[in-house]
Length: 249
Image (cartoon, rainbow, N blue to C red; front, side, top):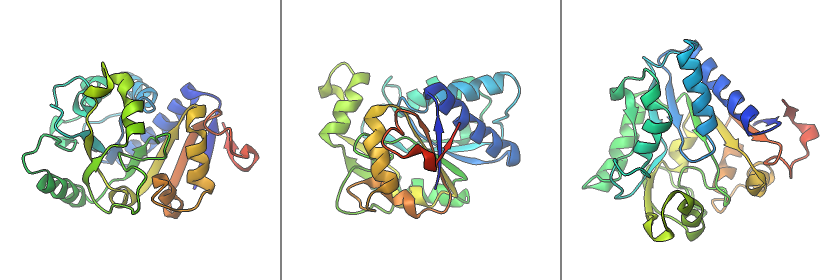
């Protein structure tokens, strides 16, 4: 696990975008695993600027998103379909047929979970998976629990996660109580993983992820076992780490 500590959120976002640029430059038909939430927005803005300046080409890229709310229509402005269009896809030259996001509106949600994992497998797996991290160390919507979920599944969202996400809705009551998410096993199969974190409120989750016991009660801790993980932090998110051990940027 490589730990890169950047001065602030803007520098973290630039570094993350540069890693995506390197991946797509070396492999134009890369399979990118993408995340939502406030943390990767800066990275997406940098990638849009790179595209507008003809530095990066997304025409052959295929994407798979981590998750989507359960039974939230895709045209709802809080759906992750809407988020990805608004923050990235509508501004780059990606082929719409190459965009994959779990369908939380599927009539048979169990079949949708199986279909999603099979589609990732048929694409030969994700080359680089972008992750954010929750205050309770969840990745995707994998909440702290008693076991690591192997595959894409429907999860009951913890109250703390719903509270954290309520800032995007008019009220807590509007926040869905369930989501469809890649399991930790699905995430773990990615060839490379890039975990992003910003702000002091993520510092403990980052410390537990890097130095804590590997346990499903700290979902991100499973990343300690992956052979190619880079963690990109701002100084606040790294505040509980001994940063002398890590590379500062």
